[in-house]
Image 1 (spheres, rainbow, N blue to C red):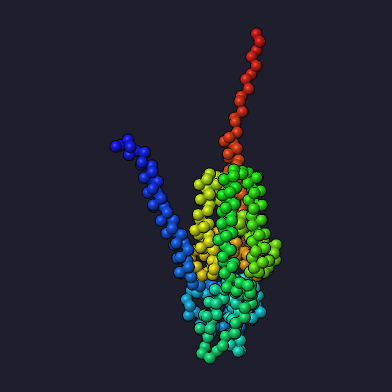
Image 2 (cartoon, rainbow, N blue to C red):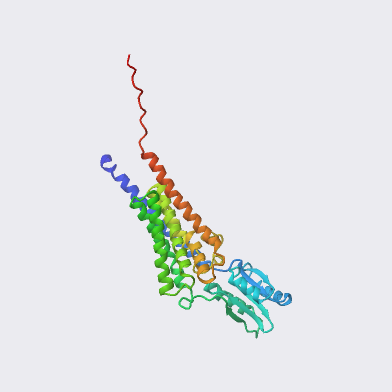
Length: 335
């Protein structure tokens, strides 16, 4: 009995591992996607207020009816507030005018935030006052709700994970692996820009800048996956893929804005490739590159660390597999 039962023990442990790990991963995935979605609300959302001090004081008092929702930035006039919206310093601005409040929004930054600001300002306006709304930086007419841009986050992440995994499984190492990763990301960027920009028209900026952004977003993911695999072997693919799939996409704020997610989820998402890539794509597509430095540096750091890990892993393997030099014997002296 004991002899026949012994071989079954490893299989039993594997069965238990599957029954425990799969539900745990499912619960973690549901939490990472569902929890931020159900807690979406403004948290210190940058909002401008412009006009004479006496008039803006009333506006600020009414906005204070949403505790912790807005981070107020004050501007002297409408022109300064409009510049702040175009520079991505604020998501919108309320301007006090003789005719009543005027709301400046930027649906290109986030259609959901633009809608939320319209509802908040209109709801807090005095009775009988009509709020004029101006979309300073509108989203593409082909994607007014930003649905296509939001939907692009997952395919780019999957493309990066696939590229990193394929390079690893094909046994490419060192410079060849780096060349394959860079080449694949460049092609993904070009194809994605052609589809989203040239064909669908959902992004409307400089084509080359958009292709570079999409390619860099893909490369940041693929380099991380391949780099971890180079250091830790095949399990490294999972170490790179799981955090990006479970947290990178759900914490990206692509469907709303980082300031609309629970803390510190919004900040974490911007330090991961999907969130940084989405923010950078919005900047180069609709805002002439405004506020692009931060997310671009984030993607460059992920890329540099990942490709560095690929080269480091190759160097370590080369040292382990290279034969040690055999000590030469001294010639015997002839007596």
